[in-house]
Length: 103
Image 1 (cartoon, helix red, strand yellow):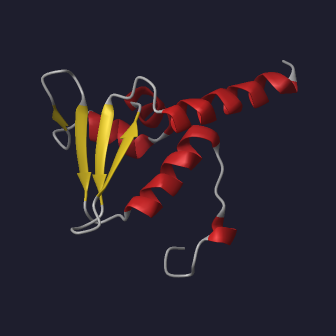
Image 2: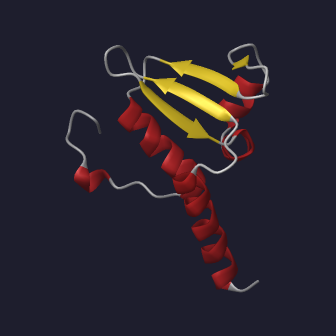
Image 3: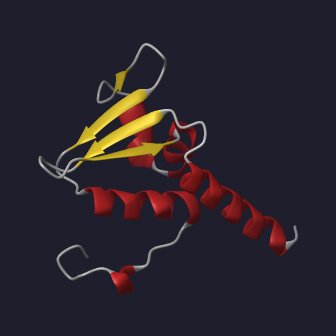
């Protein structure tokens, strides 16, 4: 398979993450007053992570009437959760722009 195929897939997943189109997960990350609302795609995160596969297979998530999943993670800051999601979507982690406390 052509190496551009995998690069194209990575680019497509990056666009999907950035546009948030057709998201079906809302993650509330962090503690008050710094709770961050982050949107994601259950198919992507459960496929790319055994942790999220377990989360969606258990009672850890709520489901709204319109079929959207709600996940609350007060123990993880919004910034850190976004770093995790970027890695799951397109395997990029840029720690050079983060301060030591985050890393």
